[in-house]
Image (cartoon, rainbow, N blue to C red; front, side, top):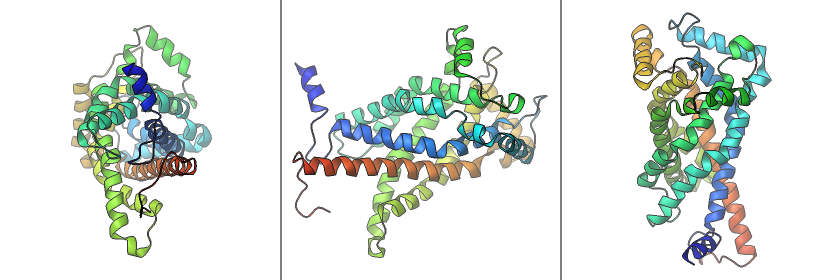
Length: 317
């Protein structure tokens, strides 16, 4: 009976924020899908810039050389390169985001938070959702890993067949840096950005600033911090997840040593390969995600008002 009651409550519109838990979850997933489509070209390009940090002999190359090689791949096949990895990322909106947002919103609900995301909920969701997210990210990166030699994506079924020979364990390469990456993403992107956006909108309200502009400014403020924290973690993920599935895997320690050696040769340019791209991607991704989420949230709330399931407080905007 309690299970049925819980299921029923999932669709009940809250009089506090005008949304049901189902509508809140759908808004998060919709915003994620919107973000995924828009930022995929930047995501693909950034991976190649980081992946081409080594030449065919395994020696680190100057960041300018890596950028040139990434540019060559995009010039040779601009559409294919821009869309590479998009299918697993779109599928991942379900496989990755349902567990992550489900755990996030679930923890937020049980912690008694109303419409806000706390650091505790963000941290818990990052750790608990990693086993669901990592296989999708691994497949996504493997699809792009051989563009320079083949000029095409590696088929998903081929990746899965190779992984199956090792009981699918290769799909979990890079889980440790992913947890750190996901935690930073949740703390700064999901918990921090909305609070900062609200503050900016209130402070600049006399300038007539709208939701989109305030979201863009908040994303621009949060992103440099986010990228500074996650870029080295992203490097570790790329190193660990683009090695051959049927070859020797690269562990966290070995990947860290590779980044350290890169820094010895090229300084901070070696450590922060793709940093500028990461900032551009972060601003685009955060703004697109939250704007898509807000559009859906407003649409659901207006629908609930029109059908009488929600009555906004007197004097609310």
